[in-house]
Image 1 (cartoon, rainbow, N blue to C red):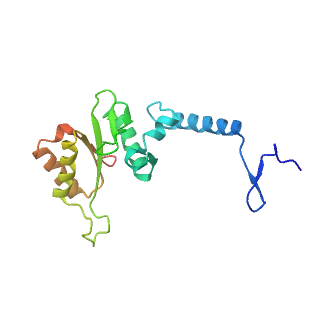
Image 2: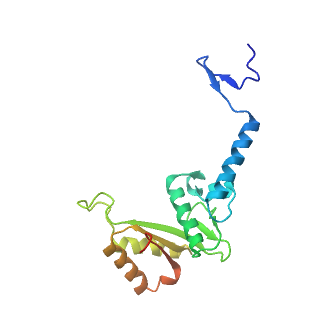
Image 3: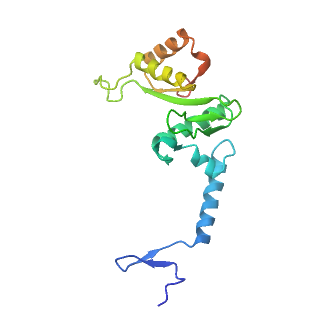
Length: 180
């Protein structure tokens, strides 16, 4: 039997394995690209959508953290709080996004009140550490998107008050749970 055009390849075990011809790959890629354009805001191409989640500091891999950042960035675009964003290509001390209209670099900081449960102080939110992380971004000439979705109300309010008291509000976008 000639397997040259059968769509099957043989693995090391000798068992047939399904393969996809190049033409089929192009069709599947086009379907994926069309699906993304229908699903996500900003009229992104599939490549642009994927690039928004790539992390230059991790070999341009798409990791869960990058996917979360992409979702936040696109949501803020949709809300009108950011213009069109692109991923910052800078490896070290880079931000997450650059607003292409303003040129402003935005870094996302996410804070969690109780990452190890209510009864554990390990890794719990501390206002002084949060402010230090935010100020470090200012030193790098980045504005900051603060993701407060995993903060309890008292921690969120304390952080908001401290940011306002220090006069940082003009460099901050708050990202909250819907309705907060």
